[in-house]
Length: 470
Image 1 (cartoon, rainbow, N blue to C red):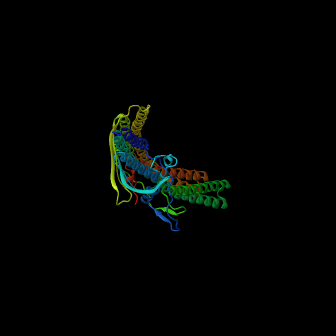
Image 2 (tube, rainbow, N blue to C red):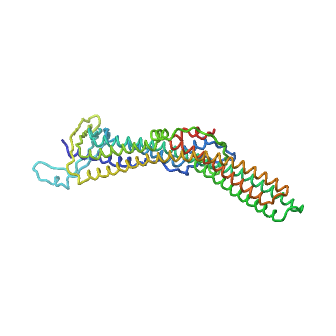
């Protein structure tokens, strides 16, 4: 009954669902890469802002560009689901019109007809009528539309999980930059101490030269070392300023807002789980893995929907209107149609849709397996880096103590005239190298702990347990 009209309606609904699902399934299922962009918010003030690690991450969650874009992707996926759902629900429209007509009979020749005793006017009207009513169209059953909706719903879940994964990635990014600022601060402190040591050595060499107890070369040598340390201090301060600017950029601070780091995050041991336990936890909880599996499920349902394009579609449509010269004189009229449409020949469209859906499913399956491999790599690498960093911190701490002791003895020997300035300069260089290695080891240790939290999928929620901070 009314098969052609109902077929057109069913094809329109199915076609729109097909387009929506294709866009939804293509939602990016991998974590957003570390993004240093942001949307600056607020107005800068002259007051120096004390920025804790918690504050930095909280701002990044709100203003980082990667978080914003992934959040909007999740909203877009929700819209796709609602569009797919609309293909399963009735569509109702209402209308009210008033029509005024005047018809000329001249073009048709009726007004000039010769019938004895009958005359026809050249114009009929004007006359008017009103009409008010509603229209209903409903795809009663379409397995394709059902599967499109299920695919869109699963893709929405995947997009939400991808957003959670982005929060984890941004926590790692911002946490690492925050640690870089702390590292740069420590380097400035250490380098300032090196400048003071070099200045003291130069002053002592100059006094001894003026007293005639040391050659001119000792003065020149210590002066060169002083200028070298001053140059290194300038570079270190510049690196510190750039690190702060990078952090400000990543978390969306107002442009030009002065701030200082409020957390020191000293060395602290943690008790991580075993590698096997960590892998089980990561496979179970990491949002990128869950998102990839959801995307694979959505692709399976999209393939089922493509195959269901061959199935019959049952649809109905109806209209009820009140028509009359006025609303008071109107009379009710209605029409109702129901029927089934069966695709017979679509010119290869269904086969093409199935081929595309199969390709998309293979892509999503490969991505899911790749993420499993990436999780294994991330967890094992995090443990390697953590264990190495723990050893490096212990070794470099001892090396700093030894270098300080060596420098103290060299200064005493130089003051006593037992040795020249070469030994002092070499000791100062050894101390500078030891301090640099120790600061690097501390930074690597903190980054390794944060990377371990990220590899387990808990960086956003448990970063403070791994790093500390206010």
